[in-house]
Figure 1: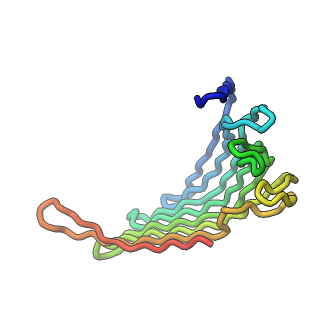
Figure 2: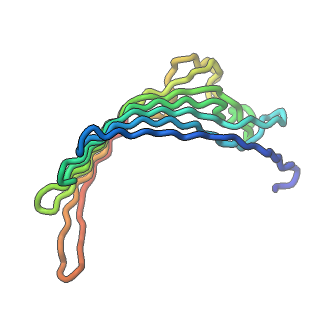
Length: 187
């Protein structure tokens, strides 16, 4: 601990349940649903010396997974929503301290495809759409302007896309080499 700084201790605990169910209507298709609660003690101290309660979250996900009969192609489609409360950020007027900005929600969907192609090619494609926004009314910690419920959160891309194509080569014996190229897009 640095001189002049008193360490703050908290003793926090909480039950964080996680539930899930999978139904397999056919050999190639699975449907699933999950629910989970998260709990993370918050680090940091407000300028007035107070500490913060833990960040909590609730997450829901519904999805479908497909696997071809030969397992050469798999795909997943997922719908999700996560709510967080007691989110902290840096205090813009008091360096070294934090402030609570309230609650936030992110929701959207993801699509993932993994395909083993002929001639030892392998293709992975993933796309996600995320709508992340405030559920609270707070002042923006950087510009002191109001953030209202429904306002988007910064640094959370709405669209992200990744793809990777690889090819395996045999070098003789048991040696294998994989070469590949990928593309990533984040808006």
